[in-house]
Length: 164
Image 1 (cartoon, helix red, strand yellow):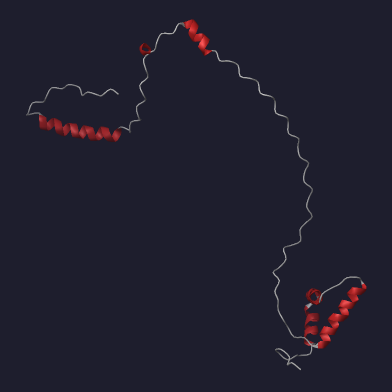
Image 2 (cartoon, one colour):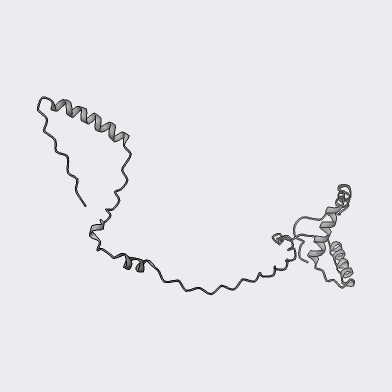
């Protein structure tokens, strides 16, 4: 890298020195604010004198590149047949909750009779399935009918029955 040398200047006379220093400081500040930061210097290019002389006929021979070998064409991809549509999945089931309740024996008898009717249709059902179907049937009824059914129920004692 070449180093910069400062231009040679005559040294100012002592009487004029303070005025010039003040003026040059102001000038430097304004120039620093106005000038954008310099970009990094590009590396110096070597001169043509440093390169060995190459005759023109040799230079053209070096520029010509050998032809690239031709690559084999890729086989075309065959489109895949579309996937068959999946059957609609049922809605995500609710979380199952285990609970216990107390009912009179007459209600358990009704559940048994409904289970026997289902067996006649060759469909096995569980007690919980009968109760769930009954809840859905109650929900489909009007408010007046549901109220009449609930008020017609015989009251039972709270809690677990005593062991016999």
